[in-house]
Image 1 (cartoon, rainbow, N blue to C red):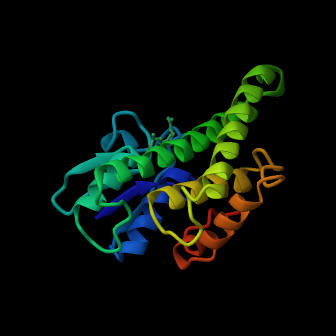
Image 2 (image 1 turned 135 degrees about the vertical axis):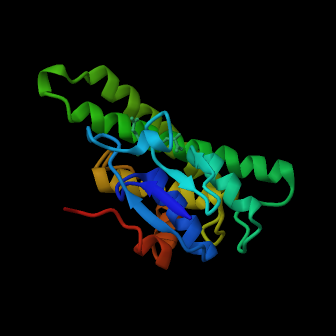
Length: 202
Ligand SMILES: N[C@@H](CCC(=O)N[C@@H](CS)C(=O)NCC(=O)O)C(=O)O
């Protein structure tokens, strides 16, 4: 299998981690969606990463769809519960984590524009999305919906989203007053799959 993506994308990291945890061998095709000459549209007309190319040449894109495909392969460990409603709840938290990644990405793109063109209103909207979502996640850890010792699509996505906030220094004070969430992500960050997919600093 081939995973098309960039090393800095949190969505790509989520998929890389899932494949590493399942022991699926894959070739990483490094391409940068924001660079002019990228070839990502060959795989995904939206020009977004990740895209997964199977050994049969079938292409899957949008990370939740790729997750679904990987789970369908039936390779342990299962990262979604077998019960459909329990699975949907895990997917809902994945969607929340993906939304944090989206908001982080919009913030980074906005801040990359010339200072005079940046919108403080837009940056504030994105910061508020992130803050509300993190508060919700803190509650999920407090009430046991999310567990630090449980490896599933939700905990992986949450740790990837927060890893991206740390990497891009978006909402740098995110850990203040969210001690349970801090503990959860620190537990996940200790895994080899997370260490191996840390975004490059240079
Ligand atoms: N919902 C998509 C989001 C993917 C996404 O936004 N990826 C970013 C990189 S982190 C991208 O490729 N952006 C390029 C663009 O928007 O043109 C997913 O889950 O795969």
